[in-house]
Length: 268
Length: 268
Image 1: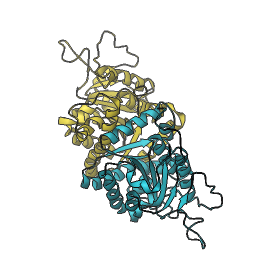
Image 2: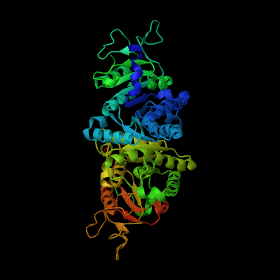
Image 3: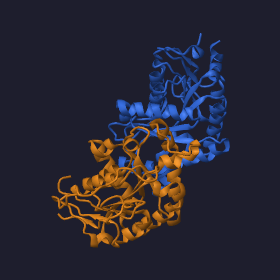
Image 4: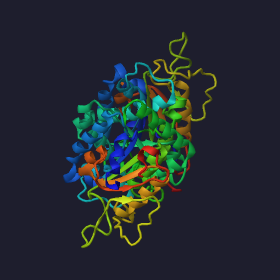
């Protein structure tokens, strides 16, 4: 009954949801409402929810009077510095209707390598969830250097899921699932289930690369999913438009079975 | 080269203003307007301004239904994660009157002290200033808790002022100046000018804030001031009410003369 194994999602007690920049900025900024509605529904069931959201640079750009995405790191940092405020504000504006308060958590990769910072971040997030606050996590782009960047927030999301021992990580983008080859290529077939340790041999996953920095794409999702699965977190890859279905446990997207999945999420 | 002289404050090129929690939260939250007016006036004269603002924990407290500052670090972190968003929103709302965009910069001490983070942080701040964005800096309390544990951002302010080679650091609190002993004690005399090499051991500086919200006291200001003056940045300690007067170069508060240093721009 693999196709319906995702019903266990409903019993997950801790879920990390990661959304990409293109899903919530520019012409897709309306999707923030849809995303927040789905998060609020899960929150109301008593699920602990953490949102990992990109989008600060894209949202900040217009305020720097820049026509296109800046290519130098310093200007990207400046855009992120302005955009992060607006990003959180937009989420909070929508969360207000559910009386949910957002808490901002900005992390760099080096924070998670530093035992003290890592412990501080873990403690802060545990307390936020205990207080029923919705943590909204992003890379601290303003102080992240090229050398130390997470590279993409898929990896950040996997590390956060691991940090807090989440049952489930949901990676959202503009594509409904992973495919055996890029979905615009003839013969591409949806992958619905990935067993733990499956090498996914013979499949091609596209990478989106901007200025040498991976900013998403199927290949970073596969890599991130493996990090999380290895640490015991099941992973679902799907589209932002399907987030409500995904969090209800409907059979959408691509499901990655975890290594030592908690029994509630193990697929038999 | 000799640092900024007190009579030349109006001609400073780059100023860091640090404001304490009790000056801008709770019953003093309307002082944000007054502070922003003073910053905008300075900004309007073409001066580069960076704001270091405490107050995230105090601002977040009501959203956690807390009446008193929490005593445990985890709850302080949670309050800060919520309060930072609200604090920035209040600043931006006030800055909107002047068409100035704020950029959030959340730092750990390592971001200001250690390479490669230090250079990266400086570059990001410089770029924000080039773009005429007002950086609003705070400690990243989710991952670093120095300020929470040691009671103030005075040290962070001095590190940032030094990092970006500000001409002047203005530290604002509820007291108009430093005194020879706590100002409520009989015989306390206002300190007007402290030379770069003047000894300070004859004075008695209190270590705690009076209000229980902001936790810094006169002693953390003196230590931070010396850190900045050693690096060639002049320091003025005064009250938030007097921010506009201070930024116009009026004779208020306690002035710490900067040390004459080597040509500060030659090495880097």
